[in-house]
Length: 264
Image (cartoon, rainbow, N blue to C red; front, side, top):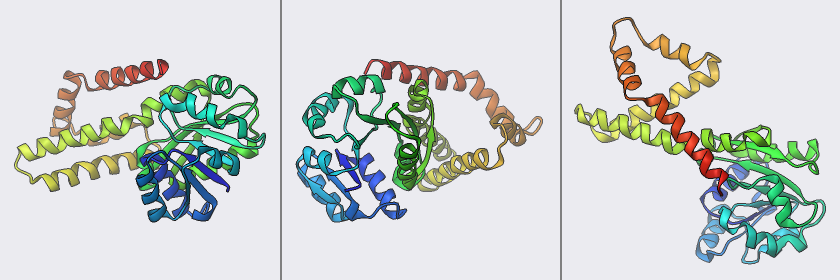
């Protein structure tokens, strides 16, 4: 197999689905294991990939092995598979707080490791994944991994010291954005708009605004100023957001996110 997943939860399924639909790899080239047999069987039915209950089978038979499990399970799973990992195998991790040095120590020997941080918009092919590697991974191998990751969005190589910031600014941030959309929709409902339309207007406004940042290359502050007419309604709303500490709240939330990652 070219690609194996140990753990096949929502994030793994999103990644696999994107990789297959983008035709980067076929379902026949992917294998996954998971302790939840019913969920694994459903994934096999939905995506057509190979499945097994044996983590070692995935580790032994995959060129790239993705550890798509929660951080608290890394120790046990790595102990289980470390003896069967081949020298040419590339280990890809997606958990926060798991540094390359720590992971190398868990394997107890030289292993090729690529540390990544994807996010849930991978479910709709719009994810972004931060990527860094250890010294054993060649640039060619890193490019291969980034190509796989591009199957469900964008992949951006960063220095490892930035990975906790990546986790805060993209890995966890969909939750902040969903809260913002929900709050805007609640306000629209309060003004008499039906809830289904309120969610549609709020979500499309966020989507379109993000697209403007990506496609125009303009500073977000400049784009904000373009909406704020002198003495108008938008600048009045911006004044209230500043008064209530929107920026500070977001910064403090992301700071807390990074601090939590450092303790995992």
